[in-house]
Length: 78
Image (tube, rainbow, N blue to C red; front, side):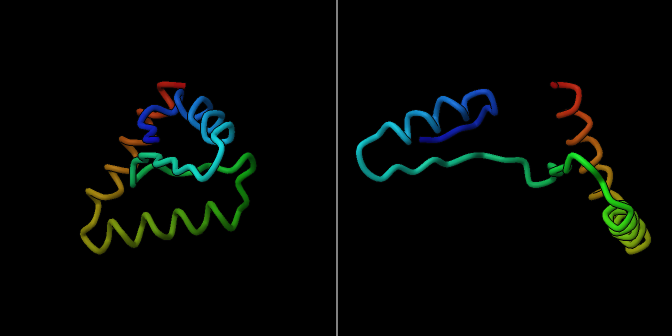
């Protein structure tokens, strides 16, 4: 099964577990989408800030902007 919409994941998992035998679920994700834990530690925030700063200073600011756009769009959907 191939899942492209997050809303379809639960049904796909139910179908896979109900299937008698092996099942494969292919879940399409956005490479730049961040997984945000329920609580963000100071070390996590520090690490992300360090990555973003290094990326911008090394000329990869477009990558930081792409991650911001992707994740803001996902937040708007929720």
